[in-house]
Amino acid sequence: QVQLVESGGGLVQAGGSLRLSCAASARTFSSYAVGWFRQTPGKERKFVATISRRGDFSEYADSVKGRFTISRDNAKNTVYLQMNSLKPEDTAVYYCAATSIFTSGTYSQLDYDYWGQGTQVTVSS
Image (cartoon, rainbow, N blue to C red):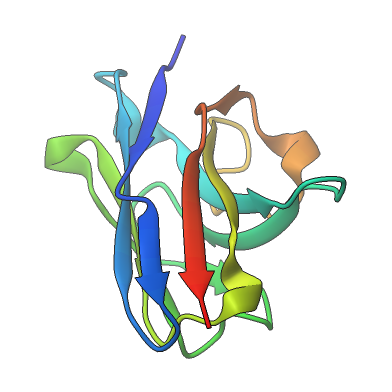
């Protein structure tokens, strides 16, 4: 079992930055690829970014490429999502998720076994 806890969300003005953290309980965290997803009310959860278990491969949704950066520190059992040049359309609840199967990372939420509770990000115009 892996428990994931997101933090770092909040209210920021457009153009600003936030860094989200996803802290994991597993001692074998380096065996898991991690993804970030986001969801707005009434909409389906959407892929944002994913990172391989070693951190040597990452992939992004087109909507965040060049603005968001995913990284990880396996010694701290934590994955980060650095979000720059934020836009109002980035407003959502952000979730991190982990998978031990797709170790290079995956954009499909169906491939993830463990999920955090989410953290709210609100970008004002």
